[in-house]
Image 1: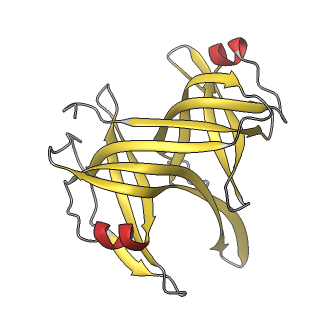
Image 2: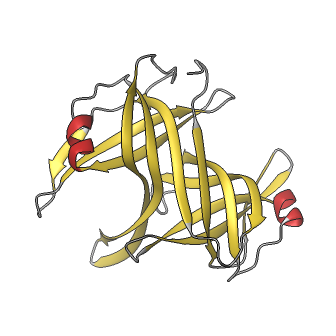
Length: 213
């Protein structure tokens, strides 16, 4: 494992829900938010936010209703505006292309980083085992992304024994989850994003994640 940056790579194939919306400018490049719907085998679907540059959109125009394939990494930043969720997760797109109509939906993510919080193991009201993890994944240029992850069943039980500082490799999907938040007298629908890990491997060599959260 590289000692200075970790793996963060995903492939996402689905249908575009809306036209690109301007997000922000960084180092002279404009970035746009694109919402992508990716179906699951269960019949439900994830709606994921993609962050796409103007240059990429000029090379591969994106329109609502079309099939799209993207490769990139899941990134996090803290929202300090006081509006919406504090931790914001997006897919930072590295490569973009049109997808064929018959190409199956795909939501595949591989992460390699450092466990930076004590795992939280519990059972759901229906008795299913679940563990919550937070993984710190380094970028190449000195920053880290802090990604909330969940795992189920035997994987959750094994993850409950992990320690802060353990180097991990996860494979799974980047998923969306709707929930209701109480704001005073009102109930507001919100969407949370997290990594659903299908497999978790503890690595012998510790990852370098800098300052843990």
